[in-house]
Length: 145
Image 1: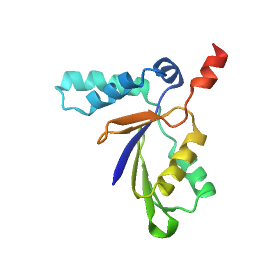
Image 2: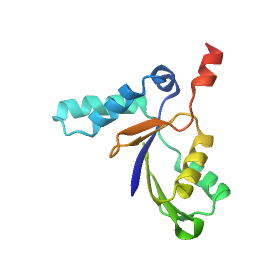
Image 3: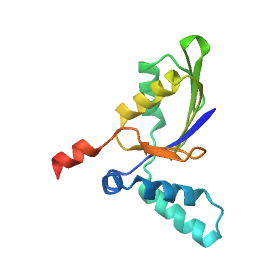
């Protein structure tokens, strides 16, 4: 089973960290560690600055409109390809957890919907140490600079 944590990054931060994704990944990795209360408070303040709140209602509407997924509380489930691909998307205030197994069809459906919703989503698979933007933002920022 694959598991991704997906964060909605502030636009200014995503612009700054484009091309420096490793540093952003290392920050999130550090935030998951157990720390002393003072350090934990400092890291939480940094997280609040970097990560935008996720609108459950807006994402829920888009998911219901663009795919045939089942919903229950804050979780959406999708099965594709005759049961050979499945994914669950759990939306929380500051992160989205995506669990998937089998082929990548269901996972890709959820990721594509999120990518279209906002271009500042950053996904991390902590188990395999993989990370990156759901939507490469390079083109938009090179044009405006």
